[in-house]
Image (cartoon, rainbow over all chains, first blue to last red; front, side):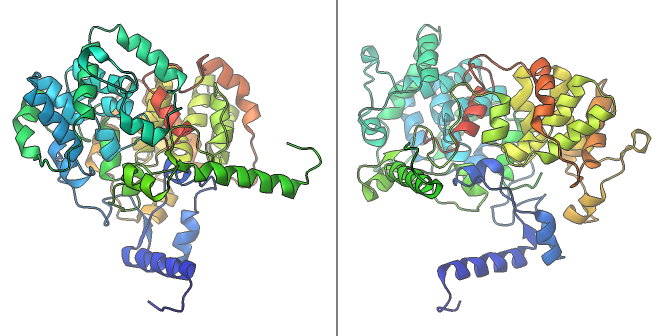
Length: 253
Length: 253
């Protein structure tokens, strides 16, 4: 590439080359653009196709992403879509060592899958929604609840307000009202301690020297996660489209 | 703000305030949004903070986006988050002029909110999921099913395969197997014709000479969309977190 080009010229040239290579037009979803602070209208796909008559909007697999199997399993998502999983693997192992039942080990293994694969904000609610058709109700409830409970200490089980949160969010950070209201509801729930256990095994598990493999949990997943025969995303469950969005995050429509 | 400031001064002051707020915030994108850019890196909050001392991970409102009211309504989302709505407004007007029932006019008005406001990929499913707690089940069903039905002609109902799709997806495009299955299921459903009506009033409604405004539909929304008192996102409904993500697309956790 020509060094005399300005940065924006280079970016344009790169984009142009990529789109010619791909003959694929990628239009970002509104939510993704807003996350970049972009409130402008979407680019006009029709006009872009007028410039490159071979180009099509993307409706199939994204050529830039690793190909997923036709019937993807939970493990496939760990391998081909999720970000680094060391944190949830350490958390799950910690739960095994503490003698928690298998379904709670699964809850610890899955509690942050939305952060790793889908959407960060309110990730506990998103993660619970993703797995709801495939796991025990208590697992769903606990994943949802950990979103809230992490902000509230419970000295009775040794859970203090995380020092890392003071650093990340500031000493004066207070959870939103809806989180506070959810906390009060959850505190009185029969499964409170299951949600709490996720936070207990969550917070102590950031150890860079420990390596845990997903294979350690294949059997726990097999026994406690109802992998749909058609593959995640293709089983007509209420959340199938959410898994499909991870498979093809830039599908045009 | 001081009334004596000129418009440009005001804009500048506002920009400074935003930059200050941005200086104090670290904004990271969710995995899904990064996957749509084929970006496989994963943000490390602690590292980002060490590079920007004093800054906190964003947990509140995104200073780059218009501020939402505390108890946002559907109309607030149209005004402050969604992209251009002309297509939906024209579609709803077309349905109204054709004498469709109010709930079907609402279905036409909302059928593409997945596209104009949220996630494009399989937008009919996302749109249906967003509105499910607030509308008649037939409306939810029709929004979900329009995703599949648009790919299949029904000449008797006045819906040919859209010419635009040939241009956008290519003449050889065939819908995925799960869409074909969904179509076969929907074809036999008692509400088939409701979803079909969305496609009928969808495809003929791209008219640059017609301008419809949201105010025309305020009463229909009022009578057919159960706006939660606490505001969309804060009513503890199964889709509340999804509206909150639309409100704050870059909340860190």
